[in-house]
Length: 113
Length: 113
Image (tube, rainbow over all chains, first blue to last red; front, top):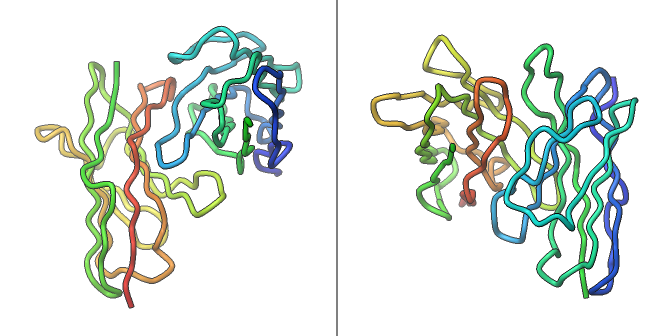
């Protein structure tokens, strides 16, 4: 079985632009969560998707949005990028039916200049 | 709402010495507790988890943690540190459905030869 994969691994964007990050969940996992990890800090919960619907959200503004597709893969979209959005973005997947713990991808390092 | 506090942002030990990383949690419901390790420029790897049952939990790489409800603690220990243990360690808490996982700020472990 494959693990959680994220793309791209690194990218650089300009303030005000929009970005889309992608995540392929581990095989059989139907729930995907996204986290933002700023340098030197712990991951902060952005939101969670289950069966293509958002079913949990942390303290992030609406310009952070997401999608989950029928194959359980997911996207994180961030509009109107700000310098403080520079961070490692982590995706985690799990199987809600089996109530497994979350398995994390390697992350996407976003730099906003 | 759930939260965790990790005491000590940096811990330094000598190779072969005891490793003790401290974590206290706050939760209004019975918690699930986790320890993750993160190596530079990588995602999070699960070390161990407490859900229900035995309060002493053994994980990978010789680590273990004990859930103490009376002290709201879940400290991570390893009897003998190895150079390869140098990394960032995160304590996390979620509800019993593995939803809304909250992380601590992390503890950087340095192992001196």
